[in-house]
Length: 90
Image (cartoon, rainbow, N blue to C red; front, side, top):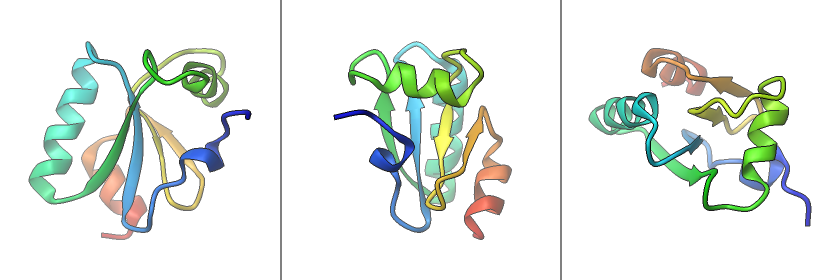
């Protein structure tokens, strides 16, 4: 099975966040989302096969995290919490 954006589409009003265990930007965004009550599913690209390659395909060959997938299938790289809430329509 190939890993695609559709594989990780989140439910409405939530996001999928690709991260690593050591990413400070990921930790900051998770904290901000939790304070605002925004749900997310975290996928560690070091632990889930195929996800590092998916992140690379979304970021011009770079494994940049956090990379976010929105319910409409679009993505964002290292977005602010404000951008996430705006794009979710919250």
